[in-house]
Amino acid sequence: MGTDQDDPWKRLGMTRCLARSKGRAQGFSSLLLALALGTPAAAQQADSTDRLPLRQRLVAEQLVARGIRDSATLAAMLAVPRHEFVPPDVQRLAYADTPLPIGHDQTISQPYIVALMTELIHPSPGDRVLEVGTGSGYQAAVLAAAGCRVWTIEIFEALANEAQARLQRLGYPDVAVRHGDGYAGWPEKAPFDAIVVTAGAEAIPSALVHQLAPGGRLVMPVGDPYTDQRLVLAEKDAGGRVTTQYLVPVRFVPLLRGVR
Ligand code: SAH
Image 1 (cartoon, rainbow, N blue to C red):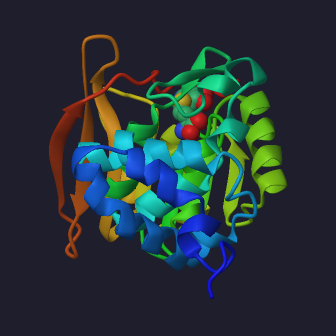
Image 2: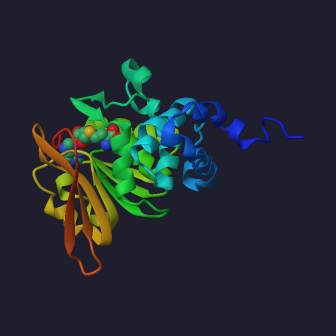
């Protein structure tokens, strides 16, 4: 006879929460279960049960309902404890559908945008990924939980140090944090299978295009930060030719110059 401990649904606390989710999201409950149980990188994160019902709801209502389908991305969003990445005064909003302040006039992005950027690079285990704009370290943790090896650069020294300590404490050994100006990328670690830039600029910095491997994907907000910024996906083919697609409108903080 089975007990709650034997029942993976109950073990993950999924039945109740997913039963409450609406519409298209409901059809994805079994997919989510498979994700939660089947992705080794996500499963490694020790804190995967703390506030899990809040993340289950976030995944169903903010991500699956809006069309996020990549299994590694959904598993990572389910696994990473977003509340650990925000300041105490906004922790109660950690799973809300919104960006949040993280100090130094910077923000942690809305969960949907983090998931969308992750999905757009098609993360697969062992991918080498550069992130520009570490901030809290949340996007880097999501990439790591999706199986990637991550190098991330932050221009504010205090944020870089905090993110590094946080990622170490939470158990993300596959993330390396550097304090510096991400315009130059991280040439010693190039080429990268993917590059995620989480601050906006008028154009994709050329150093980042150079550091993208053939077959690689780069995603970043491009355009005027206050009027017309869009997420851009740039793909480099096997011959080194780059094509870009302008996707959804977004609002990101600007990519700054000069370390702070
Ligand atoms: N990815 C972050 C949020 C990004 S906010 C997270 O998950 O929390 C954008 C971040 O980019 C800020 O922390 C900002 O300080 C940083 N930033 C801005 N310009 C930069 C640059 N040139 N190089 C590296 N980081 C930069």
